[in-house]
Length: 455
Image 1 (tube, rainbow, N blue to C red):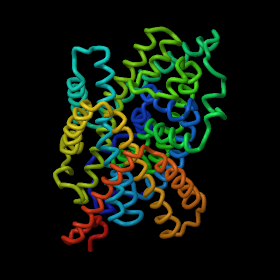
Image 2 (image 1 turned 90 degrees about the vertical axis):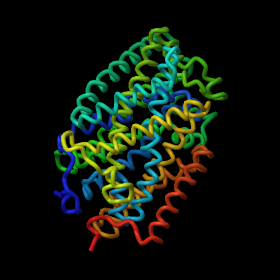
Image 3 (image 1 turned 120 degrees about the vertical axis):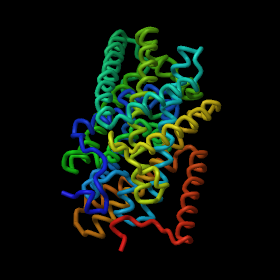
Image 4 (image 1 turned 120 degrees about the horizontal axis):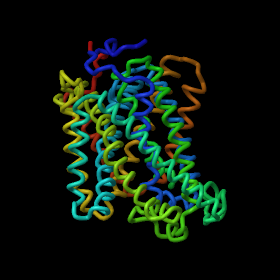
């Protein structure tokens, strides 16, 4: 079994998480009720084929999860795709992979806080969105500061609560369908010939994959995993599979009951209330309130709690290798958490969240940028699997180390091509800045070097 010492690091974080902890962490990061918050947008882009969009998103993420599992076995360290690309290909590639996924990890807590703040403000308008942002950020930072075990205990409670709300919705929606309230045919959420094109499907999938982002966050806890590294990969695959079933079922049922189908397809859902409108149609105002409040708490507390933890581990790993400011690698001796990285994530989340709350298109912009960063990093992950295993180690495992990552790579290329154009431009600029920083490092004689490469 590989240990981090053989790669030139000391074990500083506390190994206290088992398979169940890791899988639950991934589920909470993905949010079992995540489609509640973006249902209308996925419905719009998919022309009503919401379930199909999630199935395509699952296929894309399934191949990515397999690649993550392979690299987690080879390099059981914090840092996610930054570590895997850096050690699987080369340190400079690892820097670019880390830089790309930073666009995802640094912005996703801001996105989550903003969604939650907007939702809570709609029920308690006397408290502004920025005040809700501050409250959620402070709460999550305190919980994360007290250690990963505290975070793990909180996530178990939140997972049960989210599943309970989802069960209530499905039961009430099932009764509504039995009463004949369906607004369309049973198979329409999966396939509608009049609206089907592959560009439509991949464009919708580029939004739907936001719900799946999070299973990869499990990899950032590699140095807090107390079991064999293979269990880390299995927990990612397991969390993704469970979440996928939940996503497809709830969106399928909701799509059958959506009362304003044509309006959503033609205009979209700028207010983000499509799911709650559907819930009210199915069961009454109380169900709309329940699902909206549950979304706010799930995104603003549970999901952002684990997102902050994952982001701080990524910053910690890059700073430990001196590819980010060294102070981000400081570990609190008592709680054994990357304390400075945790605080920096909190401050950045607050600044970006408050700024985006002043923009009418803030939610959409953040969503697109988060997805672009993740997809770009995942592309390098698939390349790392092929380079490390198939060419460098010559394993001869054609499926796991060549065919599967190549298929995953091609699917993600299709998703990225069909993403929002503005996100492509901003994301491209972000990657260009990363390349400039990398080039300057070489000019100054400070090229990225991993500890085991130091002579």
